Image (cartoon, rainbow, N blue to C red; front, side):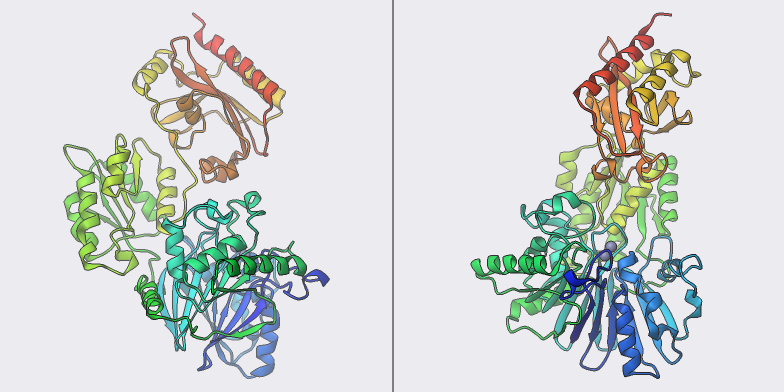
Amino acid sequence: MRVKFWGTRGSIAKPGPDTIRYGGNTSCVEVRSSRGTLIIIDCGTGAQALGQSLLAASPTGIHGRILISHTHWDHIQGLPFFGPLFVPGYEWDIYGPKGLDQSVRETLAGQMQYTYFPVALEQFGATVRYHDLVEGVFEIDDVRITTRYLNHPALTLGYRLEADGATLVYSTDHEPHSRALATGEGQIGGQDEHHAEFLRGADLLLHDAQYTAKEYPAKIGWGHSSAEYAVRIAQHAGVAKIALTHHDPLRDDKSLDQVVETLRASLRSCGSALEVFAAAEGQSIEVEPSLAQGPGKVAATASAGETHARNAINSGHAHGSVALAISDPASTTIFAAAVEAEGIPLRAFSDPWALPGYVKAEPPSIVVLDHSPPHVDGLAICRAIRNGSSANNQANHQADPQRLPVILLADSEDTAAGEAAGVTEWIVRPFSSSYVRTKVRAWILRTACRWVRAPIPRDEESRLSVLKSLHILDTKPEPRFDRITRLAAALFDVPIALISFVDWDRQWCKSCCGLEAGEISRDASFCAHVVHSREIMIVPDTLRDPRFADNPLVTNAPRVRFYAGAPLILDNGKCVGTLCMIDTRVRSLDGSAKNLLQDLRDLALQELQQKS
Ligand SMILES: [Zn+2]
Ligand SMILES: [Zn+2]
């Protein structure tokens, strides 16, 4: 295979004297097998020049394939400027990850709407076909391609190309699952180990290396790797050669030289045979089976391929089914709606003991079942699922009973027993449909769900009965509370201030300044965290907080970015609710501001406990 880099920059094109050697164009790579199969990976701004070179070499047309990793601008912006798409006689097959609610064609058409571009997707002169991809394996002529989801804030696929006895892996954009790895700490395990499996034994690895370990702490959650992590995971995976790519737009040629120099020095000092370089626009290299290829490597490569034995080309459903064995109808309805909304087929079982057999015969994407002892012992069923087909040593990832998410639905959580039985996660009642939907999505894509529900306080039962005895839930707004939230909003210059109570399944607002009166599910409640901890909670930036970044109050209206809440603890010691403030901007509170918040909270408590 021959590889040529047409774009190596990340995020945004950055042409100019400072980036002249490594290049200013965004992601685009040309790959040719020895038999002449043409595969283009990503269509950033580099695709424009590639298009011109193809037109010059083959004016009457050829058949090529384009693999799109994801549809962030820096990976597709060159597509409308890729000349061969407009020339009759050319034939293109475009592959990309199937979005959860739209096809790759629909997504690509978005950037060519009339507001953004004068020519519509339908007006290409070439013959163009679109293919939705999921994780799996498919073949393009003599090239075998394995796809795998990467960890990035967009549905993103990495591509492993095997041809002519050599292996090339394209892995950008990607952030380590364990953030410590990006700064050079921690051990490689879990999802990061699976990532290494995907890279295993590559002769050439093109890997996201946008940041340095030093820069990374300010970029957590942006979906990119540090160069140090890229090299470490490559070493771990027995890669022969790594090309750092997706260079940060702020990185000039000189500092990129330095990054590479430092990495080479540390590889030398540990006697590693890994070759590292920074991908440069215009550079062309032959990917050859490396000499280091021993029997271990061959075996590893084979198993990495087999891990994804199912067809990557999606026809219909993007994912396997969700197997459900829940007895209570209300929970079943919520789960069924969440699964349906993601367009995934559902298999419902009335007998949960049918699950281990089903998993073995027809591996689903997720299993959800009750744990309601002594009725149904979900833990025992989970153990049976985990043990079920391990004897067959199934290589198919989808069938791997160890990696299948098994979710237990229960009234309370038994963490230790769950861990021992191999439970992936507990969902404790009550829960909202939006929480379940967010979770289902994260399980399927195997991404982290940055939405953590508040734990239930230990004194929950008595706390709830005290709350009921206040007879305040669902009462009308009252000036005595409203003046406190008005004061809070004005004093702290925040758009929203609330006095609210945390009920069994909801947070109900007695006084809302800056927000429609109402209630939200307890899952989404920030205040429920305060009620659990019984302490002031300040979240300066929700997007950087793994408990809240995917919370629907953050991702949708009112787009909470900052939260500060003080607990309402009655004289009898029961914490019933909070006085809280919300802003849509990143904020902080200093010591004196905290005191003010406490003063206002005490005023609210006084009103609350007033004998009437
Ligand atoms: Zn990118
Ligand atoms: Zn991206």
